[in-house]
Image (cartoon, rainbow, N blue to C red):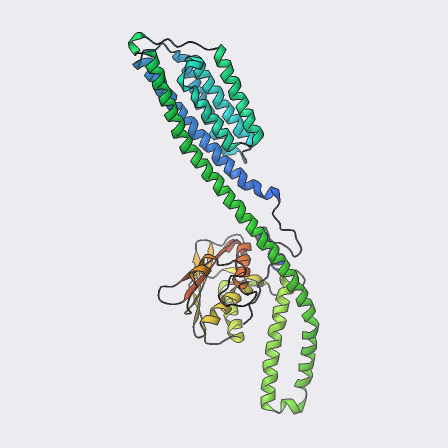
Length: 465
């Protein structure tokens, strides 16, 4: 049995019927360029930069706590005469910077590479101020500069990274000639041992913070790369869909004339007594007319979905009527006893009878019919603001490889050349309606394909609660 190809272009008939749902149902038109442009990656980059900015804020909180502990330990425990007031002012400045950054991120739509650079430079300035007040270049915690440089190399582009290196280098050079010396009392112990201990603590802080934060930054970058890969895959699928839609639309135009000719010939045959008086030939004529109407319906559906036959195939209806119409048409075309419809949606809801969705459901039913000739169940449920349609069969189920590749083109267990496009097209139709499609094998026997569709893209009116 040939897979029926659901519509893939802008459903103009539905849009003209209900303008309210049009913004939620943006679809590529036949011939539109759907390749992934560089701008398409910006949302993923923005989300990653926001996550990285949040990591810098967390690191700054860690620095605030570490500085408070270090200042208290050196001033109170070792008895070193630290300038507590100026150093405390720097800590308060970091706290104010963090609070301001959190408020800024709440109202900021996007975080840029420049914003990350500024945040890192402010952290370098704060570290330089603390080192200046506590021994300058002789302070063992100067190694924390490497943490800023490493974070910059991971987070920033090449130009910004070198800019941060220049700032750190300038701060380091400045500390060599301008700093307040730190004089430790004799009771504190050997200065050499204290310096070595400070270097050890600084090294441990660098190592721990680098592992923790660089690992999390890399995770953010991997998530961004995975998102961009998904966008590219989606763009490739859309381009594939558009090409197939163009071929289907052209084929529909070409088939229109011969189908019309066949229809005229069958009408003439119906008026010939020699054919109508023969019961066997009359029955054959009826079957031919039914098949012809089926072909014409498919061609009309392709033209409607391509926007070339407005007003056909889309109309206001309800969930119950929509399911009943699908069941009746499918039974008439396939088998009258196989399909069982279970509607537990609840209160009936006015929706748009969408020709693309109808074709997608037909496709799933046809695939189930190929492996389960005697029993198929179509279950309609409501899950919050979603219409959930489950097609259940008693066939052998999907293979493990098919379950992982469900909805991808040319993934089929039927062994036909060019097979596997049915569920791929269904996936794209459902996705353009804002929904999702999943498949699973049942424990006893058979499989279930679930279509989850947001009611806001189907319901007529603003309130569907």
